[in-house]
Image (cartoon, rainbow, N blue to C red; front, side):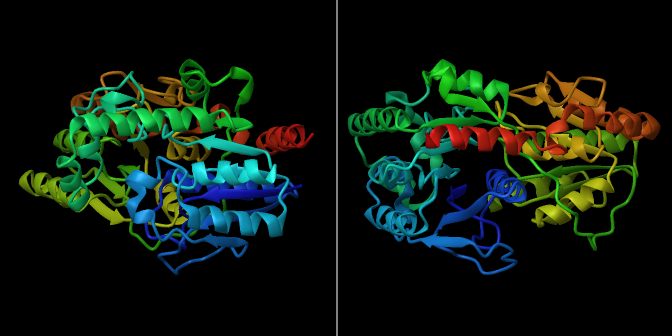
Length: 418
């Protein structure tokens, strides 16, 4: 069995990557462990550091700077040409797509070469240009893509693209999104199977119109050997790992922890990850204003294996997402597997992996910093209870420790080959 894995970005090959790329790497490792010959196809490299995978083929994407347009239509001829060249030579049995920009070009090439394709849904780019079905005002969107998307377009990018959009008539923008909806709905039907990373995600896909028989829930997660961190991590601490953003609730968490340290003055919050400069500067300004610099510590972006090493030294993991993240999220799975209690928003699929008061807390009022502060303070003030809750986490993520994910994937691939 030979599988080509398509991803827009990869750690070590690109400067910017996130949880979706970690899921991609995990997919590869699970397949390799099961004896599958798996290799990567990814967009033009823009980094050269810590490259741990050698079976990677570069797909030239010189027009990716126009992703806001080309990413919504299968018109990147350069990408399709390179995909066709590599796939013809490598002759995979299945193409497993994990990217957004390369999603449509990959489907076109798979149809041309008669190769079955599978898509792991790590966000909702299928029916939302912003990927997370969330309006600019922070409320959830139930319209999916269509004419109303023009309202969000100006929020998607900054600088020259935003200025360009401001000059385009609204009627033309609406036409653009009608065309996008038609394009995606047409090509979505050409995907042979979808992998959903949670039951909640499958439910949303089916509600959108993708046939249930074409959607399979597979939790393809894996914990690798950790890389010991050189960071000095103190106890009585909480940790956040991920992109520092409004969507991920980092601002809510900072506000919450400012409340926590009123009750536990020595408590520490470690923020692992990066974000947009303006947003991160706002966090620093707030932390400085409350004189909490010694309590809330920015560690920057880390390799996942080091980030998890830091996680094991903390007492509580906080996942304060502010939108329906129905794809894990990855750190929540990892925390449970590593026996750490989780405080997370009750939104999306979090209740599939965290049982409230058993291996963590589900915060229903997740836009309220005080609601998070209460749960974090309780766990930090009661380390024995926190440890006991953390140890129960493994029972909620058995797929991390067995071969069920690989078995499910291989069975799916074999069925598609017939």
